[in-house]
Image (cartoon, rainbow, N blue to C red):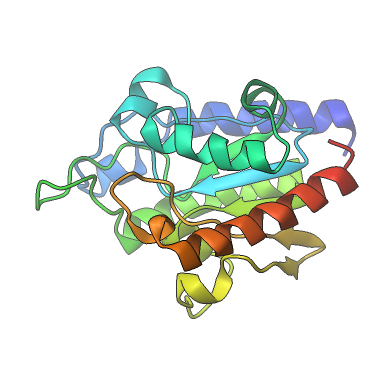
Length: 205
């Protein structure tokens, strides 16, 4: 597939994704309007959990407080936020806002069925974009590449290779999570960011 063909195929895929109503038809009370982001030339792909309400409103991934924390981390790995958003891919396990958690604390975790309904979009994007580095963010995304899902303590600060791509996990940067604030976990994140920085330089970014 030529570069222009890949660009056209990704644009068509994103048009289909924006029109997707599978979760609504399955009875899930999501807020329709998928958050779609990524260019066909991206060498780096982040995969988050699901958009929050601010992401849906802005149509931009990691647009709120979690995004600020994420890009503070990525800045340590040598990435500029504006350039990263313009040139790389920022995707998620599910693409529509799932709504608030029934407990009233935070957003609802997408069900396994919702994840399965959305999974083909992500798989097609990975195939078309063909990133060299994937950064899964949070347990839901990390679980796409690790089965069974290990403890965060066992994977943050490590990397694996799958299908010729390097996978370097990060924890979710949500302010509601206290995991990154523990000194030992902060050290794990530092190690992960050094690994990401090394891959960035190897990719010429």
